[in-house]
Length: 580
Ligand SMILES: O=C(O)c1cc(C(=O)O)c2c(n1)C(=O)C(=O)c1cc(C(=O)O)[nH]c1-2
Ligand SMILES: [Ca+2]
Image (cartoon, rainbow, N blue to C red; front, side):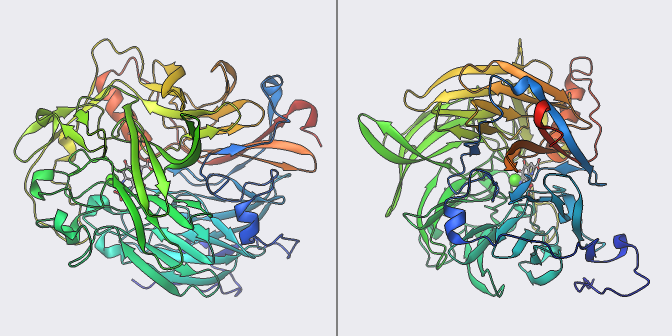
C-alpha cells in the first residue's frame, strides 16, 4: 500500500484521519535552533532530548519545585491527545515550545506555558500494519527540525515552526516485521535510529542519517554477518536472530561513542540457535561518524527468557577506591544491576548484583561478568520452564534515573514476579511472530507470600547497596523516573493512575495526584518566564496493560483495577505560580 507523504493545503481539506498531514499549523513564531553545543550542554530551563541530557540521567537541576513545597503542585493545563494506547514520550521542550508524540507517531507541538496547540502532524499508516507495541517514545530536535521514527518504519523530519514534513526516509520494510517506537538520538550531524521487531525475527540494526538531507550515512547490524567479529557465536539463525533496538542510546561526547542496548534473541528458545548469539541482550559502543562498533558487552548469552537489554546504560562517573571511573550503569531486564567501564577501546565488566529475586544466574565470572546458568531455569524446546523474574524482567523499558546531588540511582522495579515459557520449534515466516513459545503459555506467578510487586528502589552506587525502597502492594510498576535539583523523584507507573513525588534522599512520598489514565510516560521538567513546570503524559497501554491482564488472572481481588486508557498531556506548577 502506498503511503501518502505530502502535505496538500487543498480545500476542502479531507479529514485528517484519512491522510498524512499537518493540522492547525500556527503562524511562524520564534524558535531557537538546536545546535550540537546546546545538545551537549542543554540550558537548565529546557528538556531537549529523551532523557534530558546525553548521559541519560533523567535529571534536571531546576529547584523551584522542591521537597519543601512540592505539596503545592497543581495542574496548570492539560491537553487530550485523542489517542488511546501507550503514551510514553516525554514532553520535550525548547524555549517554550513543547513536542510530544502519541501512539501511531503523531507529533503534537504545544505552547509549553499555555497549552495552546501550535500544530499536529499525523501520518497515514498502511492498513495492513499490525502493532505489537502501539507506542512512540518521542522526538529528537536539531536545527529548526523535529525528527520522529514512525510505526511504519520511516524517519521523518518536520519543520519545527509549522509541522510541515521536510523529508521522510524509509528505514526498513514494515511488512517484514520492522517497526519503530524509539526517540531518535542526534549527535555530530547524524540522526540515529534503531528498529523494533525482536518478536518477528528481524536482524537488529542502528542506522545513521544526515540531519539535513536525510541521506543514510551508515547502517550497522547488531548481529554480525559472515566475516565480522562475533559471527561465529551463531551456528544458525543469525539472519533472523533479533537483537532489535527500540530505546534511545546515550552519547559520550568525549569518547565520541554512542551506547545502545540491544533486544532479545529470536526465536525465544536458545537451544533453537546454539551459541552466545552476539550482540543480542548486549550494550554496543558505536561511533556516530561511521557507525562502527567500538566495543560491546553481552549481559547474558544465548538469551532464552525474552530479556531485551535495550535500556541504554547511564553514563556515570563513579568514585571507586579513590579513583573516578567512567562507567555505564544498567538495571537489566535480567534482574541484575550492571556496572561497566566505558573506554576508548571497549567496554570492561566491573560488577553485577541482583536488584530483584533472580533464580537463573548461578554465578558471574568475576573477570568478564559472564553468567553461569542454573540450567533448570533456562527455557528450552518441548518443555515448560519456570524462572524469575518473569519475561518482563526486573525492569522492562521504563528508564531509571540518577541524581548527581544525592548520588543515588532510582530503579522502577518489578519484584516477586516469576514466569514460565513452553518452547516449541517453528519456521520463520517474514512479517509473522517468531517466538517459538505460545503466547497463551506465558505463565505468570507471584512468589508465595509476596507483599508487593512494584518497587521504586534507590541504590548507592559507591557501596552497591539499596538504601531505600518504596513498595506498591497492589500494582506492578511501569513508571519512567525523573529526578531534580529540588531533591525530588517523580514517577507514575501504577495501576491506580497516580503520579507521585518522593523525597530523593529519604524515599518518603511527598505528593500524589490521580490522573485520567495510568502514567507510563517519561516525565520532564522545564522553565518558562521564571516558572518551573513538571510535565508528563498519561495514557496506559502496551505491556503495562498486558501485565495488568496477567495479574488480574492471578488475583482479581488484589489487582482488580481496570485502568482506563486515553492520552492527556499534564503540566503542573506550584499553586502560587500557576496563574502567571
Ligand atoms: O523485541 C522488540 O523489538 C521489542 C520492541 C518493543 C517496542 O518496540 O516497544 C517491546 C519489546 N520488544 C518487548 O520485549 C517488551 O517487553 C516491550 C514492552 C513495551 C511497551 O511499550 O510497554 N514495548 C516492548
Ligand atoms: Ca522483545
